[in-house]
Image (cartoon, rainbow, N blue to C red; front, top):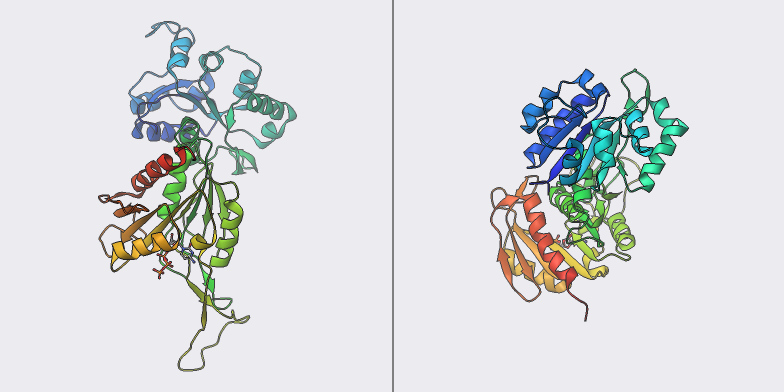
Length: 397
Ligand code: CTP
């Protein structure tokens, strides 16, 4: 996503500048070519060398430096930019951009660019909620600038309010989403399910399974990066939702069913990566079940099979099996009327629950099988979406 992309990182004078150093590092690790432009105020907090040693490129701080590496620096920088991210952005810089002021290297570069611009504000909460700041933000949003945050929390002054820089992982997410806008799933609505549903027995206990949700979350993230609008229907997991994805949190199979029925309305693709309970306790005890008898039986009833019950233009299922992988997967593919199924053998090392890798076979409805080697779940997600993109781009007959 970010490999080879020219990204200008604008850094302005906020105490949270140190987080921008981490952001620059993450962008470089992801393969981006990062040119940092700092305002004078930013250099009061962090020296340019912190950035240049990470990016291996000169940092611009002056409009008219003594030694110039290229002609009319702000024009050449803005010309080759695929994306500008201002992180952190002060109220002052936001005000300048909203009003077309170009009195330093960063504001001139933004004024001269046609690249998309993401702004991650960080400031005192009173400055943020000031009407003039809000008007400036609205103006820039109206001109197509993307704002991310600020978050609410403890500010440098010790006060608690809205003004904190958002998590860098979310700024990364926003950068990928903006760069992916024209991707092969642009304009498509993709519904992804993830995690293992939890079926209550009493107010304390529940029946669940070992699904971590990692595969579904990776698919949601990858679909976002390819331009899709994504709804992620998730059972409880320890993961945080990828930035820019609409999260619908549920607990039980029945809640997942209802959430999927609602989400698939107008969707192009449904990908069921969740491990949905097949049975749930028939009666949920109102009070905690006490330890008295020597044994305990819980009567279970079948849940609704979501994939069989809902329709979508493209339906993808998963099959995690311990035996007869291919024949079980093929039966599910046919029974649930899927376009293809992603099957994995949970007994294979590095594949299955709570790991970051997976080894899968994709079987489509024509019976064609594609065996993929062990790879990170995010790469498996993209392989799945390569197939999905081919299906959704097919003209309808
Ligand atoms: N699935 C579903 N609704 C359910 C159970 C499963 O939509 N109530 C979906 C899963 O999300 C997965 C596919 O169906 O995409 C296969 O799930 P799996 O549990 O492997 O298959 P089952 O049909 O439940 O069969 P079994 O548990 O007997 O293997």
